[in-house]
Image (cartoon, rainbow over the protein chains, first blue to last red):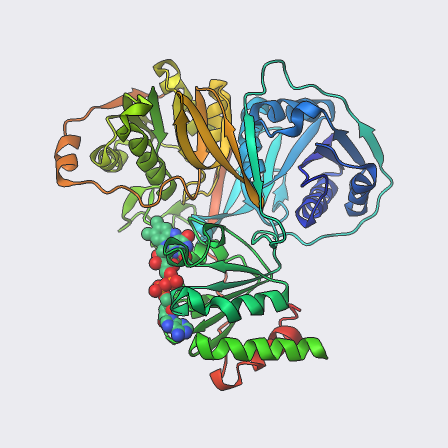
Length: 323
Length: 249
Ligand SMILES: Cc1cc2nc3c(=O)[nH]c(=O)nc-3n(C[C@H](O)[C@H](O)[C@H](O)COP(=O)(O)OP(=O)(O)OC[C@H]3O[C@@H](n4cnc5c(N)ncnc54)[C@H](O)[C@@H]3O)c2cc1C
């Protein structure tokens, strides 16, 4: 039996999310007295694959088939289901990102495996198998019991701490072909942003709302973010107005994130905005209105004008960094 | 070409959720029910596609799994502009059973494009669209921010980490849609509301319920510690607190 964790890669590299997934899988395996097996699909160097062992993977299966360069939901689900069968997987773990959201439900049907998505903690119990997950966009949590023999969990990014537990491991290169005729997704073009920290990956996110008043005022916010190595984000009206690009929009209908630190500047804290950021470990609010709901979600707050406060923060960070 | 939009019926996004029955059941008292925001945008996009005659879309149908208490939500979708509706008459919160009932109800209806929202704002599952595709044996694309047609073939933008892919998939297919799919949800006009009264809702009886998961209880988030305020004149103090107390850098 095993706990199988599926990993994608980004141009041949893994990232923190990959290590979070393995750390999580290794802990779930420990609870079940099982082993964690990693399945990596796509072209990844052995040296990159070996990095995975540090987080508790006892076996790493790598499939590099060229046909699998494109994410085709059906083809991938077929391969993962096959590997799950071969490794007698009792629990399957994927990321709760667009890739995991594409594959986990198909696997659930293929394997007749109940699914709990967006888990952020270890299972509450293994018999019955009950997990803890966010519902109502963070306004509540549910205890969900999965009743099938095989269970599928998708893990929320930035929600599980890395646990280093180096293991001796086996690296197996497996040659599996997608089922004939199954590749139906034809990618014509890929457009990638480079050099920008992704909001979903960032440890720190600095975000501006309508209280920033106009797009020209973003300079000090961006400078603060750069100094902190942070990503920039915004509320929905800001992206709707075209003040900032759409991929910065956080909230219920934008990106749902869980950074260590979220700094909300001139954001009122509407429920739909908080739905996207309430899992942040620390929230800072800067707002002129002392009654703005964002202060109820924040651990640190400054009541005042963003235009005056931002330059002070920039100075303070520069000073901190110069020490 | 026929489009299906799957709609979920959820509490309005501003609802303060409460639970009853030893925290096992949502207290529905006073809740305003709406079309799940993503599904509403999916429906909007489907109608936009139909508006352009060049796309050759004959009908936009909505489908829902739920009891008759969801009919007002379905009528709202019809008022916004859907041509007809299918409701599978069963109450369940398990995504697998929802998707399997949906699949059974529409398998012989030959939809070319099925749109589902990326998540419902109640259980945040992100699973029904993918499951439905698997039950039907259709391809699926998840994280779709744009659908247009090029010579009868859907041209799709898929959002990936740090970028996008432009791709085509031959119908029939399931597209699981997210931000970008439509700008603002379309609103029902008076004429639409009048017309919706006579549009057909086909009710399909479900055969048994096959749930793979069960919610055994809910809890509310632990209250956060009260906010600690820094005086605006000493804003720089915040950085020291974040460094020394919160230890975020
Ligand atoms: C179905 C649905 C989904 C939605 N999804 C999202 C979503 O995903 N994300 C999202 O963000 N919103 C979403 N919204 C919109 C949401 O309800 C709010 O309208 C929005 O979040 C408000 O954005 P804001 O805080 O920037 O603006 P406002 O609410 O206008 O707040 C501006 C704030 O700035 C403060 N301010 C003003 N001047 C200054 C100053 N000089 N310095 C400091 N502060 C100042 C004000 O006191 C105020 O609190 C959604 C709404 C619906 C109905």
